[in-house]
Amino acid sequence: PSMRLAALRDLRHPMSVDLWIDSVARHAKVVLVRIVGGYDWWRYGCDQLAAVARDRGIKLALLPGESHDEDLRLIEGSTLPRAELDALLGYFR
Image (cartoon, rainbow, N blue to C red):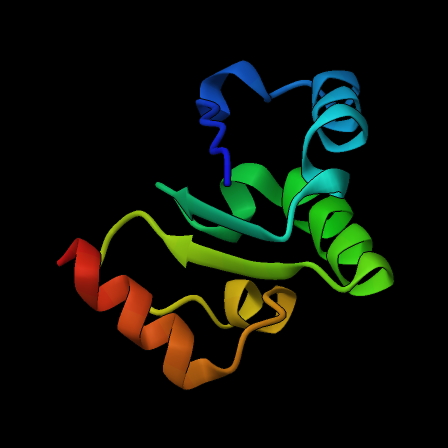
């Protein structure tokens, strides 16, 4: 399997988010996003990515960049079970 990395600082404008989702994310099996600042920092990206993940059956993990904070909106946008999200976040700790 191949892996692609992207910095969220390069995906701040809605058009760049849409382009990245159309060209990369919609073809993925798994997408993991760590967001320093939580949901509010990347609201458009979270919403669009969650919609595509649900529509296409993509495993999506939206994780807070601050490993000690819990962001319920990121959990709700993710398509993985809570236990898997917690385990992934634990790896970053």
